[in-house]
Length: 107
Image 1 (tube, rainbow, N blue to C red):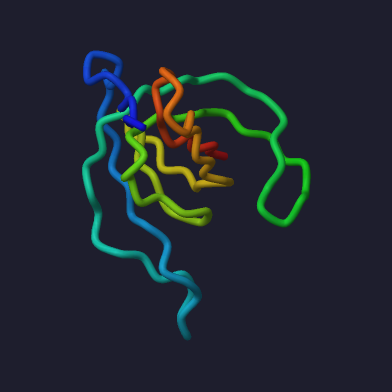
Image 2: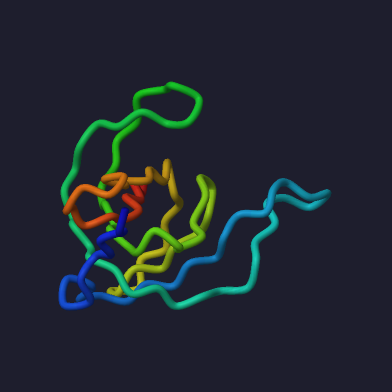
C-alpha cells in the first residue's frame, strides 16, 4: 500500500503550533513553537471534543499526517489569532487514493 500525502499545493497557509504536553504546577505546558504548512478553513460548526462534549469549532486545519498537534495545543493563525485545538483527527485512506491528512478542529 502507498500513502497518498496531502499535495503541497493545497497547503496554502502557515500557522504556528505549540503542541500541548500536559498540565504543570503553573498551568498548561507546551513544546516549543513549530511552523506548520496547512489549509485553513474558517467555518463554524459543532464538533465533539475528546471527552464527548459538543463544542463549537470556528476553524479547521488540514495538515500532513506527521503533524504533531494534540488536543489542547495552542495555534496561532495567519491573521494572528491564538486559539486552542479541540481535537485532531487522522484522515487516513489506508492505501486508498485519498489525500491522507490530519484534520485539526480549533476553538
